[in-house]
Length: 264
Image 1 (cartoon, rainbow, N blue to C red):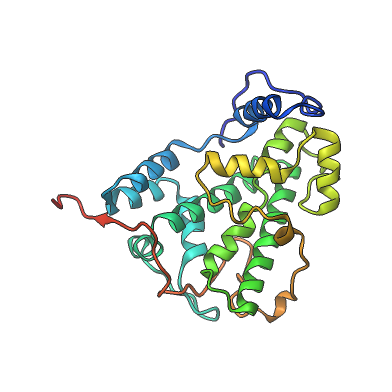
Image 2 (image 1 turned 45 degrees about the vertical axis):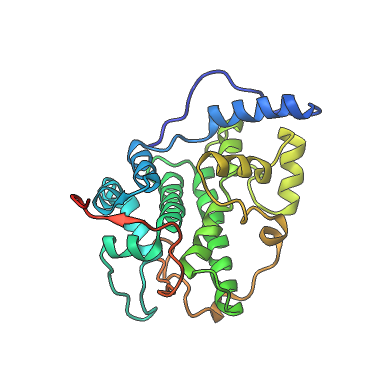
């Protein structure tokens, strides 16, 4: 289980009516106290990916440290036919996806693990359900609209859409009770602003910056829009933790520089 820092924190009401500078200080404190710390193996992965000459073996070794997160990572990004999935070796997936997509996908797998593990509270499990529901919607929309976005990244964008709820839930202290503001709807945002003086969209943008995730998915118009019928998608995951997607093997692998050990 990922630990949260336990030092002092702003109260839920502290952000209300503050100017921009004070809000920045308080939001920074809120995230320092209530955003889960990335485990050491993900920090190692981040360092390996950011290296100018990324060593493929180091990336794979970091991914394989945590079996369940690694398994979810593979399932999210694996190229497969919906009716008969196949397994792609992790090193091939890393090369296929490239640095940016590897990072966003493994963070999505990490969030699913954090929110739906044996120690997760009822409220956290509800958040996991919200994340997966939005992942389904994003994947169905990408499939229906024939978007250029890789299917696995459409799914990932849905998972990451709830990242701003995590610090708010931890700040609230709710565990077995699911508060009525715990959602990503426009109505929930209003309740979050009334209670905390901020909302999951604002907190989510800050969290994305800290975790070096793309900011282009944090758009309320995208999050709040109604979704198409899921039954018409041909690439939807078969179940909550076994998403089978048809990745576009011709997609650009951004910032990909991979070398083997010993390469000069």
